[in-house]
Amino acid sequence: MKTISPSQKGFAELISGKVDDEPIVMVNLLKFKDQADYTKLASSHPDHALTITGKEAYAIYGEAVTPMVEEVGGQILWQGNTRFTFIAPDEETWDEVVLVQYPSRAAFLKMVTSGAYQKIVHHRDLSLDDSRLIETQPTNIG
Image (cartoon, rainbow, N blue to C red; front, side, top):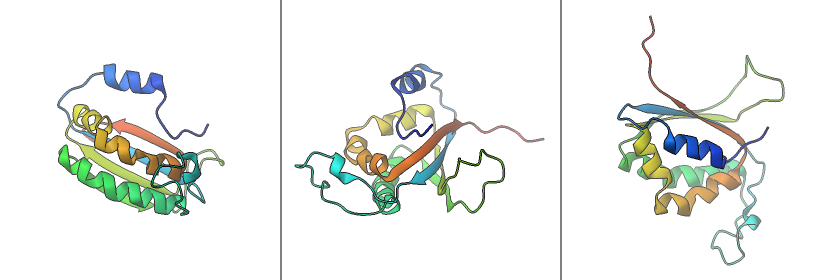
């Protein structure tokens, strides 16, 4: 099932779940639209007339969100294009993977609920055909 934004249930669970001072890494799996659909915005919105690809729209989002990530103490650890999916259903493909570290879930929540983030998140929403956002915490290997 294609998913772009969190469900109300998912967001409620994120907010009500364990919020501690442990670092997290958000794993972003991204599938871009061929064409970002800015016509979904109100005709008075300054971006309503944009005609760009999903990848270009996501780049606008990335440029705007990176300082917000850094402002809450986070950092982009890795970003790359996918080449081949070895283990997954045939219909599940991704264009890009992004790993973003935050000092805590609270820092992530502070960013995504900020007014500044709400002003730019439409670039993400309109750029993606499908996505996954998975919160992870480090574990010891071995």
